[in-house]
Image (cartoon, rainbow, N blue to C red; front, side, top):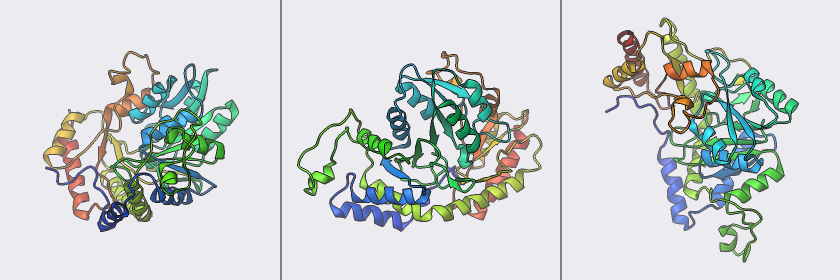
Length: 380
């Protein structure tokens, strides 16, 4: 039904061959291919990173909180504009989420000044998100966390390969989390990665990933161990070899895919810059190398978002919303969450247009024409 989808996989026969090789190997659970994926991902980030592949990005966030000892009685400051996994995982460890607003209508990342305003004696950690693949102000955020003795968790789900002042995101926090969900820049279907520069935290993460056990099934299969001890209560958040193999192939494509995404974003910005009342965030980015995960815009106030989405659909263009406000969800609407006016207004008017590295010139032109038409017809 779509002429242009919101996202398409950047896959070819290389991914098919990689998975086939794993199946033929006779070993499909976590093993040597996982180790290769972890080592290559750590190399991508540099700075003595220790990387642990896990089953998905939400598992990574959950494990990060557990590894840092976050629990009942603690507060965790999180962005108000982000996916629900961030608030869900904070709640699941028994901590209290505290929402910080966006910086401005031009910078939708978490506002360092609002982080500092929200700190209380109960604050234990700050979880930040590099929204849409654009790095946060890490100098300011790191300084605030250091000043107040707070743990920093980077949610890098949108930003594998992004850099802030030449340094890779995913190297600033005590624990950092990546997602490799289907629509991510590095896609394996379901998968994630946790990075840290602490050997102790890395070990705790590995215990948490696999039942708290001291040896893995692969070790026993290959005769390197007979039994195992359990050091701490753990979970089963392991990745498998097929997805690790897909991750290795996707790593080979990542840098070029980022360039292709950047080219599409530049065309969109040029095509939409004259639309009255339309806000395109992150047009001017200082000190950062973004990776252009999604193309979000804030519609003019006079536009009916549902009507815009329906017009786009009638033109064969898929769109999405990143993200609905937490305060509107049934699970959270009675929690009296923090008032965050900038994020709330963005959530009310945001729409996301198609963006993926294999978009053709024709695809881009279809989106541009359809969006301009939807803005014209969608005004109240």
